[in-house]
Length: 154
Image 1 (cartoon, rainbow, N blue to C red):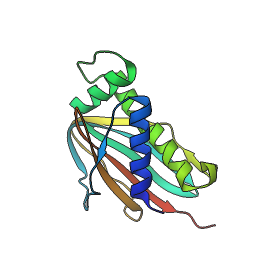
Image 2: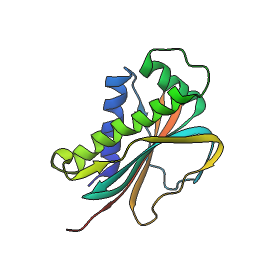
Image 3: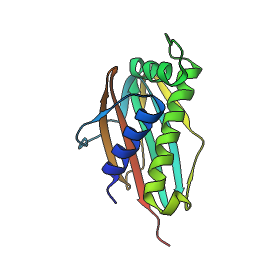
């Protein structure tokens, strides 16, 4: 399974259809950082045929821009609306990726989306999983979409 292609396809589709915004993917990053600064991460866990998670990591500025476009409002601070919107973006991305992983994604369940963030926070994930960390550019800045999955044997 080409996880990078699944992430690129899902991200481009969701941003174009839900935000009317074109995003440009970069090359997958070889290493990830566990520490993020002045940002927010939306996260959705996955279980079933695959186990892992999908996350979107962005700066506060990009998170506010995404939220403003998504909700059609002016956003000037990171508040509960921003956290909910970034969590929902992770949810939509995970939903799109799960359908590419198996027939209609029926054997994969998604957790309730959540968001974490702050001036400096740590985001650690499952070390044994296959992973891809894809950077994307949009008019308001850059963000990352991370997918970590481990296929579960029957």
